[in-house]
Image (cartoon, rainbow, N blue to C red; front, top):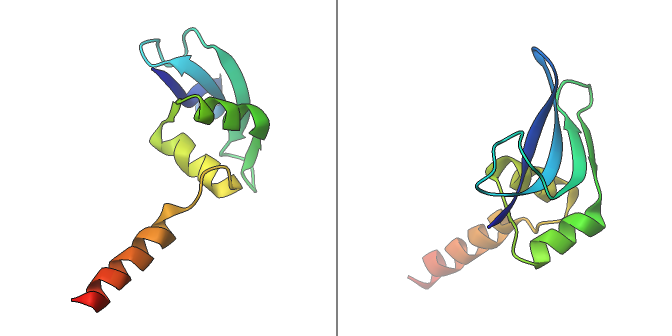
Amino acid sequence: MIKLRLRRMGAKKRPSYRIVAADSRSKRDGRIIEQIGFYDPLTDPVTLKVNEERAAYWLSVGAQPTETVHILLRNIGLIPDDRAERAAKHAKTAAAS
C-alpha cells in the first residue's frame, strides 16, 4: 500500500520534513516514490508547501495519509473536514431519539 507520510530532514534538534509518497513497507527515511511537499514546524508561522495536484492524484489512486499528513492536508483544504459532518449527524440522531 502507498502511504503519504513525513520524511525527516534537517539537523539534530532542528527537524523539517518532506511529505512523500512511499511504500508502507519502506523505512521512514528510506526509498520514496515521489516528494509532494515540505513541512517545517519550527518557523513562525509554520511553513507548509504541498503540490496539491500531485497530492490529490495520490489520494485518488488510494494512497493512505498518515495521521499527521491527514491533518496537514485537511488544514490546506485537500481533505474535507469530516468533523463537522459527524457533529451534524450526531445532532440529527440525538434529535430523532
